[in-house]
Image (cartoon, rainbow, N blue to C red; front, top):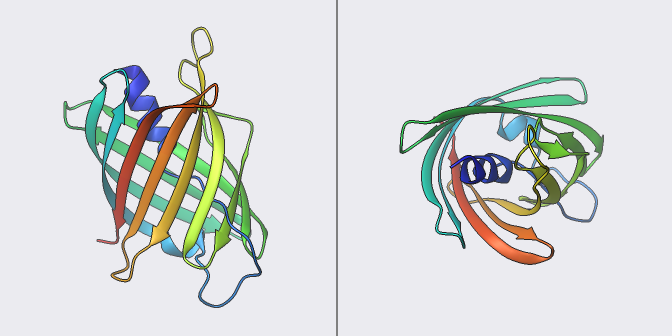
Length: 167
């Protein structure tokens, strides 16, 4: 279950795109300011399938933005992860989290954030590194949908779907 839990946690917040920023471009620190909630599903080729809910708390100071994720899985298990982002340009961020290997670069294009990053699924054991490929898109109703593929050695091994809403 740790494998599935860690994959879900890692899938929630990564981003990418191109072009200069405009007034309509997504800004993570604005969208996730204060409290946000999410529901999601994770499914892997090994049969792991988990539904979850997340309460998110975003705070910012200047170019820095933190996003705490409090997960509750359908089986009652809980987990907490915290993203730390730095705005590096009009449409880019650099971010990391406890289980992320190195940093990720988030790129924003309009209302879409895309990013890819490495996650160590077993930080206290033998390393088990996978790559997440996230695409987060703000919808006309204000919700945000994150669809992510998870790959190992370039092969898809899991997928996650998360819907973020403002309470």
